Length: 176
Image (tube, rainbow, N blue to C red):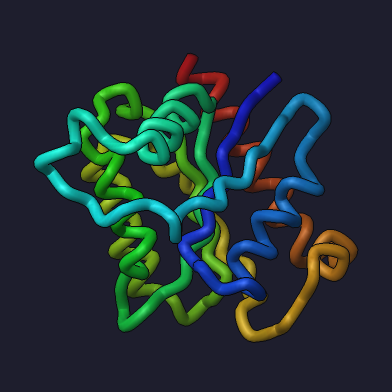
């Protein structure tokens, strides 16, 4: 079984990014298990003074990421950058050497979010994670108010999402 972790950079209840990740979960091949991490907004502010003895919620995130075969991220762009809460989550795991070489899919829900996507890619590369280009499509659903059923029922949306998952799974197998 291939284990992936999906993380949305959005805290919005009706987030297009989270909806894309839920669609990815629905479209995952039988041998792939995707866990949706939903605690980004509950993480405490990063504090380097406690980085080596973090709160349990941070330790749980680190363990979840260490134990997975790959990460799927869908993150909005705020003011040409990465949302603060999501950057905070990344700050809590940036120092973990257990995550170096982890394959990552960066799924972009908006064709206009090029600055945020570039900023996120820079952060991910700095962390030593490996961005899988073939697993990082733009699937323009932002602002469309699509639900999971609409996305998985539309070949123009579901097709690239399936291809992204397959590419991430292949990268994860090659990293082993």
